[in-house]
Image 1 (cartoon, rainbow, N blue to C red):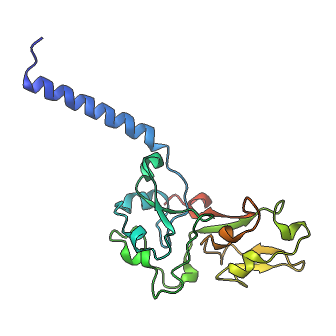
Image 2: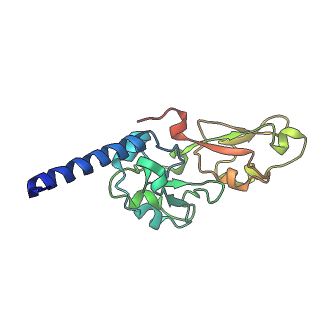
Image 3: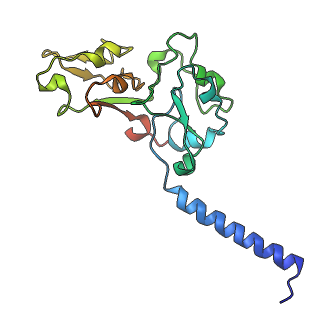
Amino acid sequence: MNLSRRSFLAGCGLLLGGGTGFLTSQLAGSVPVALRPPGAKRGKAFLGACIRCGQCVEACPYDSLELFGIGGGLAAGTPFVEARKTPCYLCTHEDELKCISACPSGALEPVEKRSEVRMGTAVIDRKTCFAYNGVTCRVCWRVCPFQGTALVYDKRMRPTIDPKACVGCGICEEACITEESSIVVRPADANGGEG
């Protein structure tokens, strides 16, 4: 069989194009819902704006940010926060949110005040939360950077979340003393934000 150079290159192009199309179709549906850094655009807008440079991860003084690996599908290389492991401390002792300042693409948009960050919303599992089961516990309230607004107590001294004030930093999730956290942050994209 005698292949010309043109035929060979055309065959390679078909193979590469078909493989890329197949890979893209396999990855298209696999975008994990994740807790994103402060100021992150929502859904597809974030994935389109993030250039996967990792500068936000390098800038984070608390090592709160990680990058999705290849298993993250189209989100591979984008930053996320695993709150139970290392929450976002909102650059508490810094003069700015370092990840936003480091972002060169605008995927992380400026936020005027830390109280305006909307990474997600904490949700309490009343079946496992000590306070809802007769045991005094105030751990989540003590660590909340917005105690008295985002996290308040009801008349029976049980924690409740104000979804309009919760920034979704995950500090409460990391601090919860139940084996599997009784308070978890539902990422903003899980609340219907497809951007």
